[in-house]
Length: 142
Image 1 (spheres, rainbow, N blue to C red):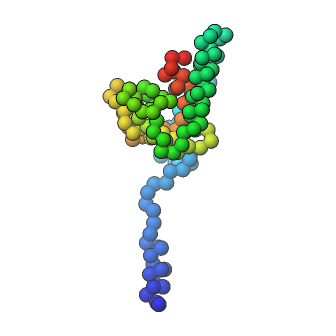
Image 2: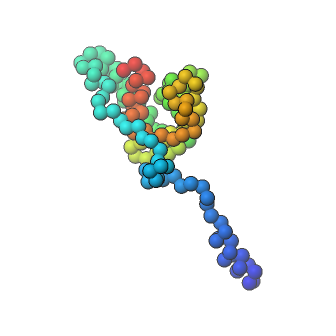
Image 3: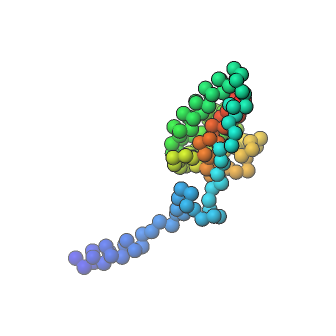
């Protein structure tokens, strides 16, 4: 009975998690992932009352629905087809590492040399929902 008691007392003290903790926005200054903020201006408003404004608003709705539906481990095409499953035309592939109510943490998994994200493979970036919507609209020509 005593050897079991000694093992039960010693073992928990030896077990510990050495992995770095990842907290939502609470990491140290040097460990924090950069954040892409939503733009101050709305791309659709720039179209005034033209017919392009209506199609822009529809695309904006689709982008918001897509961004709000992202969850941990989802595969994302960050460049060259944002809003679609990562396919052959995707320049930058990412995965959702975390999400909170207003933003998504994307981990860049792979990027082609012509991608603007090429030097940031394996890094993580927080995107506000509005930044993802703006990215979608930009990739669709608005």
